[in-house]
Length: 155
Image (tube, rainbow, N blue to C red; front, side):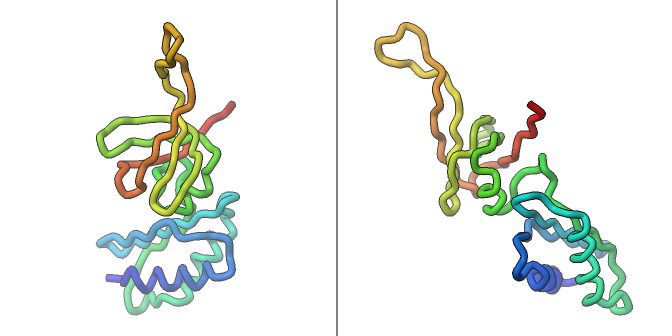
């Protein structure tokens, strides 16, 4: 079985001095290696090819045969690393919290493991007969939500 740390080291070597960041590495029982990278402006196929060749040049198929797949983190997929949250500040996201409550709102800020989503909610305002819709900030911890993902909009 191919060692995940070896692949991670190779990916991190390739990432040096580049604006890309590592999202995930998975190695299956059948030695299928899946590497996900991302970039604030999106991922170019040429860079995926370059990273794939870099890894292939440094792993020996004679020692252990493997299948390699290098790609970008899917646009509609849940975030896996903090840098993805940072890249989507100011964009609409969907959060499924630890209690199973789903909210949609604007990703407002990220601070360490915490992030803030501004959600439009009906709020009872003193002096008004009916609730008023206004933005309410909700703070979440990345490690306590079930997922957070970018909402793709074609508006």
